[in-house]
Length: 551
Image (cartoon, rainbow, N blue to C red; front, side):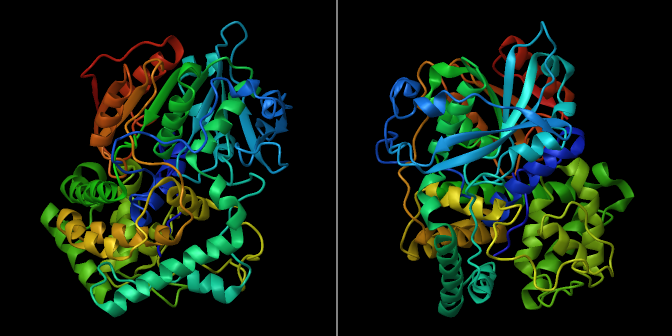
């Protein structure tokens, strides 16, 4: 299974096309190319939202939660920012059982004395992206001065993610098991019984490895619990109400917070929105079509963005090149330096999808990679499919500096976003247990989005053998929340614009800010979007219906 490193994909290259976009594009790219539907839930019979354990009106008043809500953060210097940690219960239904997550925090203390409004909490997406790294990489420097002067910029690694303790991993420590779980022999469209058996076996091996390595954590890393952690963080920061920005999966986290704690929201920006009323199959079809359309837009607009560096003299030539490479890689993988496996058709689809997040930063590198692939070298495309920031020069061994045996599989990797993405998405989203439901979805997905659709469906197979969560598809239920600002990019491939429209309508008083552009998310990529978002964050200035920004 291809698991590009991220909303990405969260990650992302947005502000200055460096830090946040690298976090957002990479994490959502994982979501987009390998788990297209996993970050949301689907429509239920009555549209109601069942709760695993309904939170009381004021959980801080519960005796068994008082010690968590009463924490005082101890900030210490940590490079150019400040660091602290927050302890939260692993199971909110049994907060006194001694099991906890310790979440790392990072803060850029930018607020000016006399102007400070409070803390601005960010989530870069994923699920699985590190908020600590976002702050360490300098995201505060890319925010407008008005926001920096009035807010300290804070983020955290959610439960199970990054440097949280404990953290998720799908590495069992058994080399054979880990290699089996990492292999995906499924074609883009498994047609025969043998191909489908192999695809299902690979997905089950991956799920089994995750259960073996992280089984006790898996029921406790869902978005509902992460949103409750966010409220503990709000209290520890000394904030009466939360000011929050979430990108891509971060919109799911923000929505869950607003539903559970609607009167504790001061301001909330949800950029690259996930509509919780869609089921897994609807989400696959929508996202897959989004990526297909984005690649079409790349062919049509490459000359405007890249200029003479495009891999064809016309949109027709670029489309023909991509089709030629898809057919070629279906027959035989392209050679990749440092790899025995090469780049197959699934890897090509992954590279194309991952390159659609920030056209202004990524299309030039994609164009170079496609030209090299047309000459028979898949090295650059393989690097893009793996989520590398820059494709290596042709002829360079991408693994030359890696240790022969790789990392110790018994340790959680420094970046565990792949495991976290699978774990959170599979827990959050109801998935069919019967493989026939996935095979039945292949034909509609192929009709709707071609190779992007069928690869999206097969990537969901891992969730069929996952511990069942309690969330169900639902419309937003957040009575009493103040106006929430939803940002939707019309050409967003990973979180299609229609989802932003739907989410804004579901919030009472919800506001929609439309960004007419290709690429994933808007805040941090466009001056017009930035001004309106930051006026809302600072002064709670409402965005009028029908407001649009154009790139």
